[in-house]
Amino acid sequence: MDRPIFHLSFPVLDLGAAKTFYCDVLGATVGRDNGNWADIVLFGHQLTLHHRPSEVLAPDQRGVRHFGAILSWQEWVTLGEKLENKGCSFLRPPTISNTGTDQENGKMLICDPSDNIIEVKAYRNVAAVLGTQYDLAEA
Image (cartoon, rainbow, N blue to C red):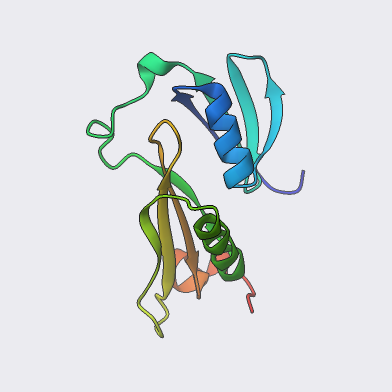
């Protein structure tokens, strides 16, 4: 392991539907799975999906709670096209803001089957937004 792996654990309404969504729609892979919870690897990070329907927040209760990933520009474009081709329902379709500036960014918002919001972003100039420690070479 050459870099830290982020871990996030959260409840889902239906474990099977959640695994199908994350794997078939977003390209995750399943790790451990005991029937009550499953570890999946999404964008190189570990999510633990817990079958706990009573703990899932209703959409009007979740406030600003969400999670996501920052992808390379090309990965973001490719994922957006893939989701559009699969007929994914977006809370916010792939949108580019601040075009032509150091702050140019792409963003899309989707929900999993338990209404957990997933925000996927890309920055043309990651260092301008997150600082020079994130100065990634991108085409």
